[in-house]
Image (cartoon, rainbow, N blue to C red; front, side):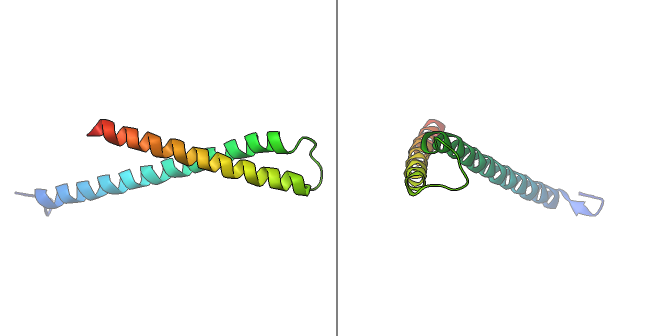
Length: 93
């Protein structure tokens, strides 16, 4: 039976589509929050370790240290993220 010109199957299809859109938006926002947290952590940790005396510019050794630190931090983050996703996936099956 229709309600206000819509049948129940089109309403449920619309609800499912809206729910999927909201879920996708939440996933994107979580990914953005994770990326921001990663950047903040890299900035905090690498700056502290690589730039003992801040000045108006970075020395070549400070630049190299920052580059190595960021590479290591990103590699570690990637390893931990993959392990976490694998564990969650395994627990859900």
